[in-house]
Length: 235
Image 1 (cartoon, rainbow, N blue to C red):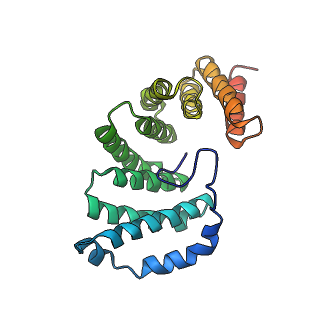
Image 2: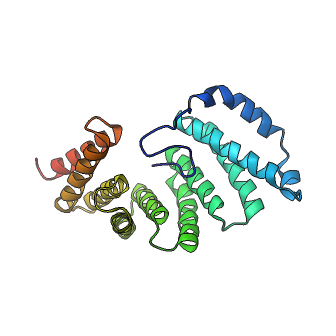
Image 3: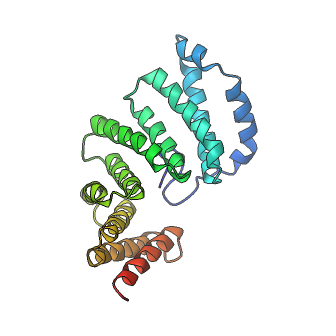
């Protein structure tokens, strides 16, 4: 799942990302010198917002390196700063909620991630409306968390909405649609409907290959999930 508000595309890590390996110690030193309460209370909150942004970038780098335990407190601090600066329902707060929830899920805590994803979704719907592509991404992410928690029936309508929004906004062959189809296919498989899952999984593979080429990591994921569906069908 993609981090939000990160300088990255769905294709992979952003250009210049390795520089963070050099910058990270300096960023951590600089942010450690900031007193959050003082900067949040200041008439000019630019220092607080800059600190939050740096924390989020540093945490995102650590997340890419699979250093989830190290990333978590940085995401938590960024979220706390932005909630204090913007209030609980600001779009930037939703981004921070989403990014922290992704780390919690990676750490094996979908129950802790769920309310954060739900808040991010609610803010997105209130900010952008129910049919925005950002809402679609958050619906799909929440559906995956519900799968983790053993609730595919609850995940299904969210995944179906995500696909419908993606197709309406982007058309049927967009990479976001492929990701949504893949999630919905997994949900249907969980619900004991591999026959219903198969055409969705096949579409995800076809879109992924057309967009990314045959040897991209996303294609590998879609192929693996399709193989599981075919196995369920006795093939």
